[in-house]
Length: 222
Image 1 (cartoon, rainbow, N blue to C red):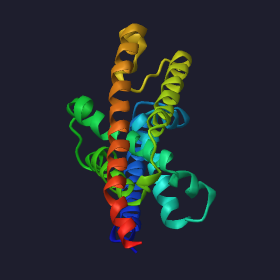
Image 2 (spheres, one colour):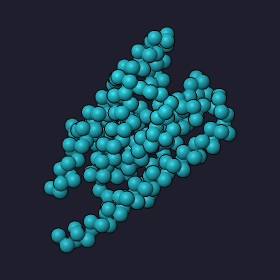
Image 3 (cartoon, rainbow, N blue to C red):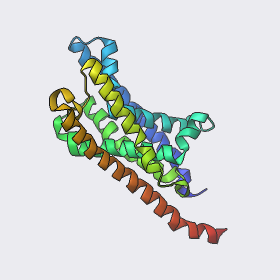
Image 4 (cartoon, rainbow, N blue to C red):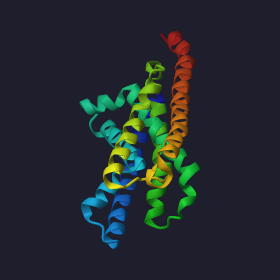
C-alpha cells in the first residue's frame, strides 16, 4: 500500500477527533452564553447551527468519521466521491481563510473558547485538506468539480436569507441585510463567491497536476 494511503486513516482519525472536539466545546459555550442572556435553549441551538463554520465543520466531522468507522456504508461512498470530497475541502479551506482574513481580529478568545477557535478554524481545515490530498483519487477529478463545489455555499446563502427574513438573525455582519442592505450584501457575496471559486479551482488544478505527475510512474510500474 502506498505510504499516502496508509497515512490517510491516521489523518482521518485525528481530524475527526479534532473536529468533534471543537464542535462540542463550541456548542457548550454557545448554549451557556445564550442561557446567561436569557435565550431559550431551542433558539440558541438554532443560532449555533446557523453558522457556515459550524455546518462545514460538522460535514467534515461526519465525512472523516464515516471514513474511519463505517467505510462500507453508502454515506461513506457519497463523501468519498471526488467531487463531494473536493467540495468539502473547498468549504473548509474557505472557513480557515475567511476567518484568518475577515474575522480573526473581531475577538480575542481565551480558555476553552480558544481551544474551539483553533480546532474549528485552523486545525480541522488543515487536517481535512491533508486527508483530501492523501485519499482522494486525483485522476478522477474533473473541472466540473468547481461548479459542483459552489452548490453548498449557494444553498447556505439561500438558507441564511430565508431564515433572516423570518427571524431577523444573520450570522455574519457582511450578510446582515438589516444593517448593510441587500445591495452591499450582494456585492459582498459576489466577492466571496469569486474567492470561493478560486479556491475550488486551485484545489482541482493541484489535484489534476498531481495525477498527471504520477501517471507516467504508474504506467512504468505496470
